[in-house]
Length: 493
Image (tube, rainbow, N blue to C red; front, side, top):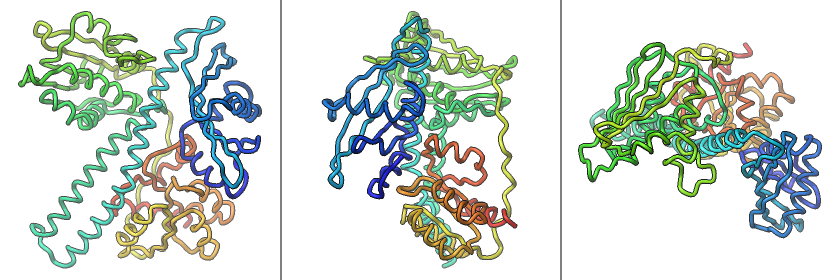
């Protein structure tokens, strides 16, 4: 909720953040993030959220930039704690109060189950990992998209000029290959970005293990030589992001317990096999040192691998929770008289978990054999220029660096075959532009293709849920981009 044109920039910030943020001006709530609305609704009906915000603003008047704890009872019997940080700004002769809120661990009241607190802390940890992964992926993907598009264009120009593959062209090819590696790493990282969504899909466990080992490879090799052997296994129904988190947590602990200085020939082997109706993951570290007591308590809350000073004390119990939640089991044992350790995870091929039906992606059409007229909307001006150069042999491109500029262009000219629109932009984002265009010019709505660096808010995730076939992930190869634009151009024909 926003008021006034001069506060319009708040909406971009509020829509883009996954944090719980409220902005108060002159006794009114002028901006409220989705996370804040969801959090504050626990104290009462949605209609009372504004009242709660005003009360928090009053309670924290003396706090200014310091965090202050506030506790209120929720309907489920928990005394829900809020940690509220208040900052104040002067804008156009008006005072803006910005409240950053987060939940403190709930304390049982009225016989509430202690398991609720553990569930909450696990969820909070997953959300933090997901938010970090999504943010990092988004910040890498935009510049990577610019570099990848420009390198592809440069390679095309050098090829046309007749340069040899083993000469200057080799420099471009090597650079482009490196960019593709960056894209692959970032897409592996995005596995962790969905960790807080609890999304069940058909998962190849070997593929998840491989991407986890790739991401952790450099760190693990500082401690030991890494050996992998992933046999072909049937897919299981699982939460891909949470499995990756469980595997990475255990691998990090195993690596930290291996000292290459005292064991220069140390190895960590990671393998998976399909046996007896289950997928078995075996992690064996030749020089990872654990006492028998540590192995007994390793997967318990407040076990030996819980972070020092941790409030939650979860440690590797989160790994065990993920495995148990998939109907599996995890055990550890000493080998070679306590000099090494072996961990075994078993995940059943069949469980009670089910995949929700998803909309099938229509087959991609062939790239266009004639020029298309395409409007490209993105707030990254360097990326706009890169797209123009990349597509100029197949597409007549018009550029807009904001949603407002795109809307102004569409008021004057609506003869575009397709619109490539970034989802995350300041002021008017891709969703707002699409909704406005759908209302004003319905015929154009089917021609939209959305691009994203991957930092989805709950709002954008909901928006693309039924439009996944219309979203391209940055950085995108030229052929895939042309296919998406051609598909959009054919939708209303």
